[in-house]
Image (cartoon, rainbow, N blue to C red; front, side, top):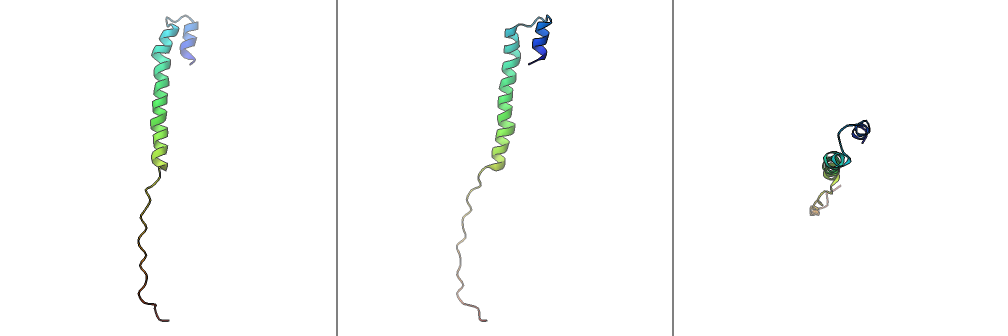
Length: 67
């Protein structure tokens, strides 16, 4: 966001359209995709809900132990 516009001001042969088409749009799309994959997906996989464990049926003792 700084280097290319500064170069344009100083006389580089880069148009505003070139800057947007070949720099800003690909970089923005890459940041969106990268942010989703490396941040959003990583957080989802880390904190996703675990499947509910089935409760084992409680077996009642058939006898009461003597004291």
